[in-house]
Amino acid sequence: MTHLTCTIDHHVAIITLDNAPQNRIGDQMVEELAVAMARIACSEARAVLLCAAGPDFSFGGDILPWPERSRSELQPTFERYMDVFNQFERLPLPVLAAVQGLCFGGGLELALRADMIFASSSARFGHPEQTLGIVTLLGGIYRVAERAGRARASEWALTSEQISAAAMEHAGVVNKVFPDADLLAESRAFVEKLAMGPTRAYAAHKVLLCAWANGGVAAADEIMFDIAMPVFDTRDATGGIASAVDAMEAGRPRPSFPFEGQ
Image (cartoon, rainbow, N blue to C red):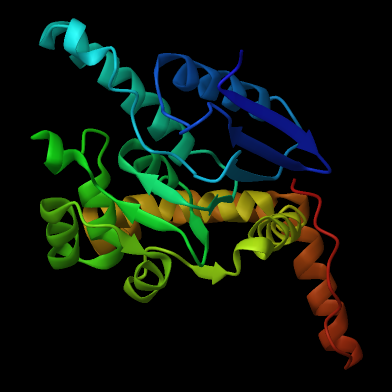
């Protein structure tokens, strides 16, 4: 049985974690995520929704095989997970994670790779690694720090406490919180709206944000025009600018432009 599914409909790719009962992340799910990304790259998808089947998003990594593996065996496994997760983070498309129930460990580290996180009001987030005597192996603590600051990241990782969706929204980790029954519908509607936007411009913004995260404002400034200027040659930019100029010259409101994602 598959541990992850990917469907593509109306320019929206939906990746669903589906490894009952806890959506634990193991070798199979990671490889299926890699396959899903390859499929998305060859498709007409212009936005991605990451979600999960069942009451919980994910309890984190599948630790059952770990005691039988030596450290030399575990490290390449974790390196592969990191590589696939980072590929997901770098997808040149807007990515939204919709999180319900419990979102722990590797599940949280995967959700943090999305550009935005929507959560159900009953969702709970956490780093359980401290209770196992290990660290957040896939970059969770510093990705939380990037969004919420070092002090909160340290506290949450060191205590392994469960953090509410409301607290995560207040800290800037989660973008929006919805009633449980509305989460998927609201997330799907938002992603469908993103899929009708200027995809290439959004991809450029992702690259600039990555440069800023890695090296600060100076690093982003350094690559700004190498990244920004090619966007002017896209059909979306040429059409969008022309539409805006026509509206200004005619003295009328600028209409919504039907972006093609090209």
